[in-house]
Image 1 (cartoon, rainbow, N blue to C red):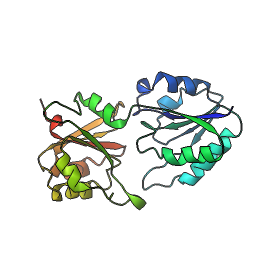
Image 2 (tube, rainbow, N blue to C red; image 1 turned 135 degrees about the horizontal axis):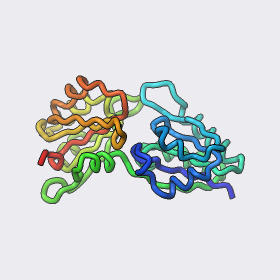
Image 3 (cartoon, rainbow, N blue to C red; image 1 turned 180 degrees about the vertical axis):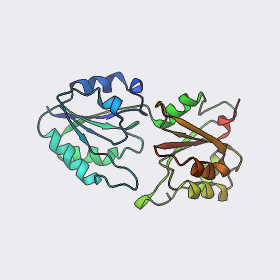
Image 4 (tube, one colour; image 1 turned 120 degrees about the horizontal axis):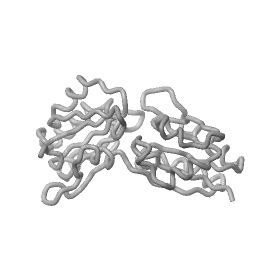
Length: 238
């Protein structure tokens, strides 16, 4: 029976792949991967496999999601061993729903293989815990862009009142608006914030500031790679 594996590549470092994903890559015949999956992980793919970059990058020319779904179904119908390799964990901002639905409509079986998500990897790289008794009892993972890549329509008041640790994915472009929305909703402007670029990779870079100062700090740093933002009392220096 034809079966597609929708697998997470983790945050970037090949050592943080799950054993299952590494095994799948070693025997795959077709791999469709995101642009953020680095060369060190792509080197683990069987040398005879067909490798297709179908990555989507905010603000850059890339494949439309409908085209990615079409290519995925087309690859599966060849009867070959197919892996769809997504950055991080496919169930967190991985556009997984669209691809699962395309496979369902085509009558193709699939299995989701989780990966380490960026928030967990960033916290580990920083030697901090996202949760802490009496300080942070929750973690809120949000996207940094909304429809048509504009500012997302989050419930900013609820986020400001919830406390805990906030993790913002894909927030570089709209960070000033994101922070302004949180401040207007009443969040403490002095809570610790961290921006971590290319988490877990050798070129990883860490920026620290109060939340209100983070947009200016980030603008001066001019990052070129993916950035994850964390904010909350649990991140205070110790």
